[in-house]
Amino acid sequence: MSTTTKKALQGGEFLIRESSPQDIFIPEEFNEEQRMIAQTAVDFLATEVQPHLDRIDAQEAGLMPQLLDKAGELGLLGLSIPEEYGGFGKDFVTGMLATEVTGAGHSFSVALLAHTGIGTLPTLYYGNAEQRAKYIPKLASGALKACYCLTEPGSGSDANSGKTKAVLSADGKHYILNGQKMWITNGGFADLFTVFAKVADPVTGVLDDDLSAFIVEKEFGGITLNPEEHKMGIKGSSTRQVFFNDCKVPVENLLGGRGNGFKIAVNILNIGRIKLGGGTLGGAKETINRAVQYANERQQFGRPISSFGAIRQKLADMATHAYATESALYRCSQDMENAINELKAGGADHAKALLKGVEQFAAEAAILKVVGSECLDHVVDEAVQIYGGMGYSAESPVERAYRDSRINRIFEGTNEINRMLTVDMLLKRAMKGQLDLLGPAQAVAAELMGIPEFPEPDDSLLADEKRMVANFKKAVLMVAGGAAQKLGLELAKHQETLMHIADMVIDTYTAESALLRTLKLADMKGAAHVPEQIAMCRLHIHDAADRIHKHAKEAVNNFSDGDEQRAMLMGAKRFSKNTDLNTAELRKAVARKMIGEGKYCF
Ligand SMILES: Cc1cc2nc3c(=O)[nH]c(=O)nc-3n(C[C@H](O)[C@H](O)[C@H](O)COP(=O)(O)OP(=O)(O)OC[C@H]3O[C@@H](n4cnc5c(N)ncnc54)[C@H](O)[C@@H]3O)c2cc1C
Image (cartoon, rainbow, N blue to C red; front, side, top):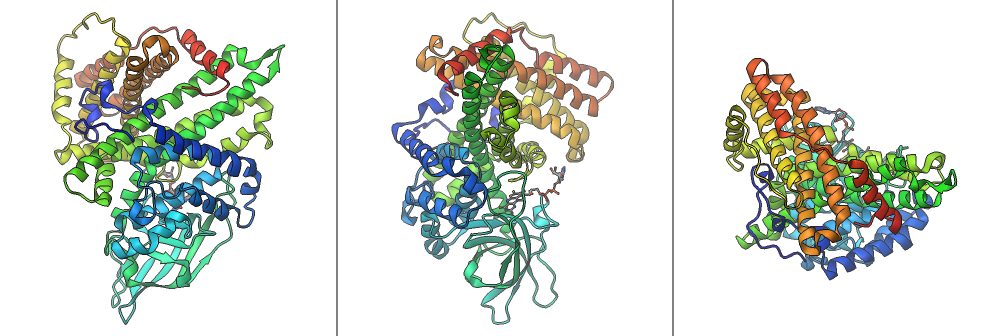
């Protein structure tokens, strides 16, 4: 268990506060117990899942529920569930590590995450004592399998616009559910459905503005399923349309109070998003391992293809992407954990503390959803390329990985929605007075008008990168501050600009996370012992600087003109100033290590 006791970093504060390496948790600090849990999950995948991927993808009858049962027997379904409900009560970081490791299980990972995440968490965190006591132990063991029914044919990203209706029965004992849900993961075998519906006035039939949530047992009746969807990937994951036809739900199964469903959906998705970041990281590492092994084995022109610079470059970039993603993932997980612990120390119960702690970092959770899913997409694409023709064959493991990856940019909120949410949530925290963006943004605007200061000579490790990350924050504050000032509330309608700002925020977060992790590692082990991590950190920040420059420039050109535009364009250049790196040498160093060890080894 991680033991950081320092005052918790507030959500979004990474943009305005200097963090020191000691402030963050890094994966190299996992304790013995956490490593053992991870190994249990690795062994489970190796014996129960990986050898049976074809059977899983063929949706062999009963196989997926059996695998979930076995995972339940091993404790993998109840890791983060409090002990009083039959779980193991493990902390957030440990749960994240298990999510990461099991993320390498293709369709099984999707079923597992849907069950333990969006399937179980609404009842765990919003259920009353009776609801929790009745359902959570069975969800923790796998005796009940769960799914989450939010999306409808006409209501996807705009989730609160659903039409599924709940009408109170004349005797006041039941809600009668009618409606259609779509794309429901685990729908084919789930016993328990968290269903989002709008309560209708029994006289006028007018629907509430906001959704309510219901715990619906399949046993209640009135539930029918369409056949399995034919999907591009995750073919072994059950995905169904679910129809509710006069489904009678006892009133005591209303979850979290009438009209609170949208809040529940959103807060559960905050957890789901960072978990998806973890799962996709696990998938990415597994795919990198396969790519390195293949590149070492495959001979062309009398040499292993891993000896070619073009292939080495790909391997190094894949690893660098995963390293930066991992750095941000565990930094954020521990920040959430710190916030949760602080809330608990202040008297909040576990459920409230967890929801509030995670909500505070909702922007970072959205960042990790985007970063993890795009890291995996990058990795599987390059893995197919490294496999060449074999990568295009259904007999190769990377072909499945390539198809399975794509869904991650779509569910748990599309990456466009998550990008917009990232900026929106930061601005909302600022407007509520929880995050002082204005002061630092004004300071950057003033700095822009002044004469640039020449930095003091600094020969400490990664000194250039420290300066660059500090400047990235200024670039974000300059562009976001300028756009907010110029466009006011209209900014929400300028999605092209919002996308640029979101990408700058995302790059800043991962760049700083990789930097702090590397500095902490160098401190722990000595810089001479972590040259590849130093190389990846430099590569990531170098690439981030160029991307940030492009996004800053385009955003500024979108909303400003005249002197203001000229000043901000100069600022964009100044705050994304890059170094002249020999990236080939750095990539060679990273790839050499992986090629030698035959895997992602950082
Ligand atoms: C395999 C699979 C499993 C799933 N599992 C579940 C599940 O278990 N439970 C569940 O409830 N749902 C589930 N979903 C649904 C999933 O969450 C939705 O598909 C997703 O939220 C997107 O909704 P949509 O498909 O209606 O796309 P749309 O909302 O129609 O979006 C289409 C495109 O428009 C963009 N867009 C939409 N609105 C905006 C906007 N305001 N501004 C800018 N761009 C916008 C999107 O980013 C996207 O690119 C699953 C989906 C799939 C494919």
